[in-house]
Length: 221
Image (spheres, rainbow, N blue to C red):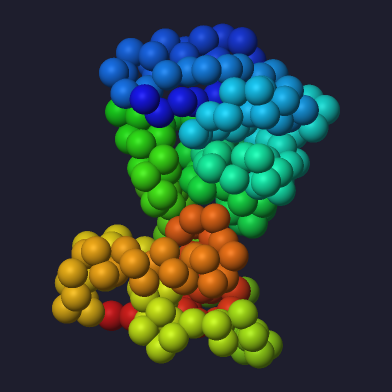
């Protein structure tokens, strides 16, 4: 079972998400929270696999709560999917940089929401349709010659190549096909890169790939 915590200040929204998630045979809601402080407390009490986190909540908001969860070594296995009605670039960037593994708007179709929980639990990064395009466009707009970044020195040449492909949005299977290696080998390169760079998941690899200038829109065919 994939254990899920719901964090939203609207009880009706939480009830709807709970009904949807509990209807899936492999998902279980183990806690609810009405604000960011409660979300952190519930996560510490229940140790969920995934948190569905609203951004705008009274008191401590979802972005601050996400940073708290990411910073807590006891919650290193928790993945956060940010849910909001505000599909604005500022929220997208801040959510990813705060440590979120995914970003979905609340009008997402039910099947896509269930898929999102499973994908993020499996270690993949996830963004709403349309968000990825804006994200890349924004990185392009902000693009400038990057300062030297020594974090990448820890990677081998092949790991840098794999990181660039992850940042370009390729899955492990797609990376394997492009590099003519097995999917298991591609997954190993991704995992080793995450360990060396000290990031939690693929979403953070994507952010790091762009911020270090390793990959930019249009560099890859």
